[in-house]
Every structure is written in C-alpha cells, then in structure tokens.
Length: 115
Length: 111
Image (cartoon, rainbow over all chains, first blue to last red; front, side, top):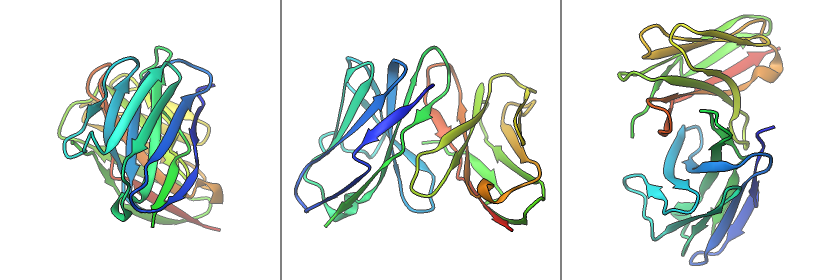
C-alpha cells in the first residue's frame, strides 16, 4: 500500500516552455501533498504544501506564479513550471500524506532538464 | 526552513559491518521518519517513530526516537551491497505540520 506515482519521470524542454508534472496517490486518499526540489547530492527542499481543494502554501523564496500547484482531488496534485529556464533544471519529487498516518510517501521523482 | 543535521555525512564500510548514523535538531520533534533514497529515485520510507524512547526495527534496520526528542538514530546490522544509498531523517513538530528533512548520510558498502 501507500504508493505514489509521478508522471513524467523524465522531461526535456526548451527554455520558455511550461512543464506539468503529475503526482498521484494510487491506493489512498491524500489530504495533503508536498512538492520538493532536490539538487545533486543535496537534501530535499520543500517548495510548497497543498491541501485538496485549497490554495497551496509556498515556502519562502519559491515563486508561486512560476511554480503553479493544483490539488484538484484527493488523489492528484500537479506542479506546473511556467516559462521554464535552465536554472529550473532539477529533480522534482512529490509526497503524499493521508489515511490517518503521520507519514509521507514519496513519488519516484521527475527529472527536468531545460535546454 | 529548518534543517536537521545528520552525521556522518558519508560512510564507506565493508560488507558485513554494522552502521550507525544519527540526526539531531535544536527543536523538539514529535515524529521521526527515516528514508532511503537510491540515485534517481524518490525516498522510500524505512521506519516511522512516534514516541520518545521508542525503538523500532525493520529487518536489519533499527531506529530509535531520542529521549530528548531532539534526535534520532538509525542502525543497520550486517550491511550488504544493496544498502548503498542516501539515508534521510525527517522530523515533524506537531501532527499535521510539515516534515523537516536532514542533510542526508551517504552510505557506500564495499563488497
């Protein structure tokens, strides 16, 4: 149980385009989903927290107009990187919490490369 | 945001040896989680701790919730090559709040 999927796993795009990443909880309802960014050999950096049906809460320094988060249902959250630039290239990981447990289950991550 | 300090930063050990790593914070946490991350993958939950002093095992892994609630420890017994990866701790101050992640411990097991 507690499986979280992400799609796509890899994406390469041109500078200036927008990229959407999906995060799904497959076997439980996720009341809260989190989006992280991770640089090579570094820890996870929380970008934002999203609760189903409400606006996401962004961490300090994260541009909400650049990283659009939508949590439309209890099993799906999306992160859209708008007008992506090379410095946005990174490993983006989502996690989901739900089912009454105070734990977080992570997706497999999405590697974004902006050319 | 707050970050937890993990020690050691990296470890190189011989297969079969035991491993110990810890995670410390200046703040009190009520929940501790330990994850393992393989290259290019998302972290996988290993052990969850919910009570000060709690000692929980998962196979060859044992984790403890420190009495002060400001630290946690993870031990791996009889290491094997597939234990290679980065181990992260995560702490939560209150139910429903976000988890703060540690700086990570990179483990290399030499066959």
